[in-house]
Image (cartoon, rainbow, N blue to C red; front, side, top):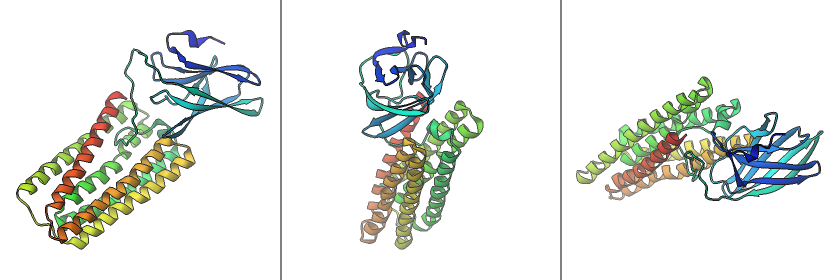
Amino acid sequence: MQDYEKSEGYHGPELNTISTLNGPVRLSIYEHGMPPHFRLSGEHIEAVIVTTKRDTGMQAFAMENKGEYWQSVDSIPEPHEFAATVTITYQGKTEKYDTHFAEYSHYHGHDHVHEHGGHSHALVHESITRSKDGVRVVSRSFVVLTAAALLQTVVFFSTNSLSLLADLIHNFGDALTAIPLGAAFLLKNHKAEKVSGYFVVAVIFISAVVVAIEAITRLINPEPVTNFLALTVAGIIGFAGNEIAAIIRLRGGKRLNSPALAADGMHARVDGWVSLSVVASAVLVALGLPIADPLIGLGMTAVILRITWQSFNSIRRS
């Protein structure tokens, strides 16, 4: 077997030699002229899976036989510091071995996409786009969030509430993640996914800026917010829509062993609580504090703009 780890794509601390009952295997993080992937070399291997364990959760990497070595199907997110379990099948018998990779300073000759957690309205994880079940999960959450945002839109015209407008834009933004997903899955084209991701980010950014300008205008020249009961119901609709989407994504993430789907599920759950700020706005305005509505709307818009910036950087570096 070729000693590929000695090429310039291999970096010393990112190679682990594991002693198994069938002899040593070498697991490395290889990234010469490509995003970082696991590579594993060893004798008589029939199948192998590498599972990483971080504080943010676990991720399973399927490995495919390249002839001279096994390579992970998915790329490895930064940072490269995590515990790992290598599951190897020899002659129908499965064995598990634990190892660890430590992060260190290095230069690879190309830019890395650092993942700091959080949520992106942009590109969809490749493990989802390859799975029809993953597409179904995201599509169902798209339908739920779109329905919630449409109902909130109807209520908005009867309340004139900026906090509600900001929330429905946020929910539409979450739903629109299905656009780059569809581009990736139907066209099998990363460029199409990237272009559609930029489109989604641009739409959300422009909408958020409009809300921010309107919020500042209303702070200077207040306008009445009406129909407090409908506004309260709209906030509850936003909460319910996000909670249902969270359940769909979390169950799908568990079923598909997809950390990306699970992270989106947790984000949708947090968004549900954000939607309840619309209810808070209705209560405060009803109590005689009309300034609360543009202030809450402005705060929610700041959150949307931050997510939009993170999404833009995610697409740009992909």
